[in-house]
Image (cartoon, rainbow, N blue to C red; front, side):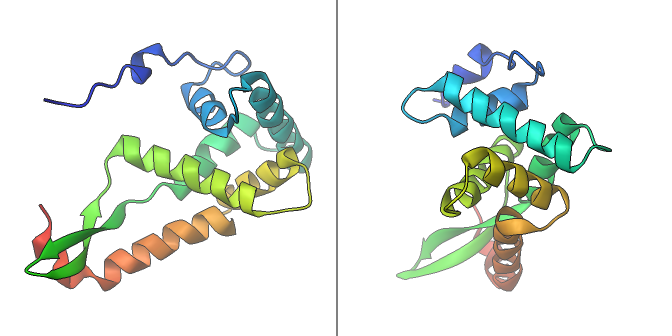
Length: 156
């Protein structure tokens, strides 16, 4: 039986930009159920993006940043005859989006010493420019998949 995904039907677009992606991002950013605080941080970060890059729409920059971080392939462990191989596999669209959001937030949370909205704004701009910790993570995953191409025939 397939996995039930009720969240996809009940997810509402965010109130300010009417974007499902922004709503998903805010939900992942949320900590201890404080959605209003997560929204405030997200919108403040987009406002900082608007100040730093006035020529680009902040929501477009955010969307493109997430697109740039999405991985095409990933490696998964597969046991074959007592040995574990790192097998490169295609990533489906929903997982691509989830990984991209997770990596951006992980990069933001690893940086210390500044306000979250500042760190988020900087990471989004970096991802938009194909730089930064989240984009580096994507590149490392792609490099790992490329290095383990020889085990692709173990994919299921």
